[in-house]
Image (tube, rainbow, N blue to C red; front, side):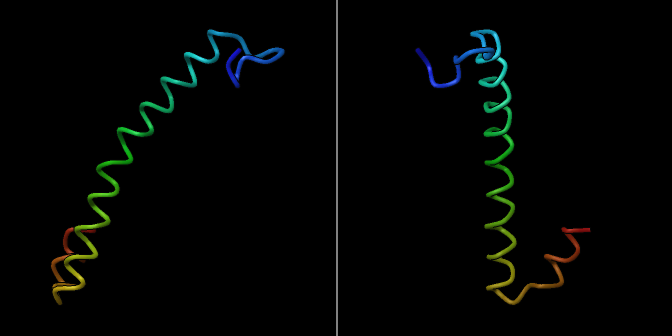
Length: 55
């Protein structure tokens, strides 16, 4: 028995949650890369370029 499949939480609900978490993880990678790039710009004294990209 899976962790989520208890009482009212069915196998279909488990598949829906898996799809949602998959979509969330695919959005997390670009967000992380954006954060790293912004930190790199600040570390290299390019705050103006980071501000232009952010707006």
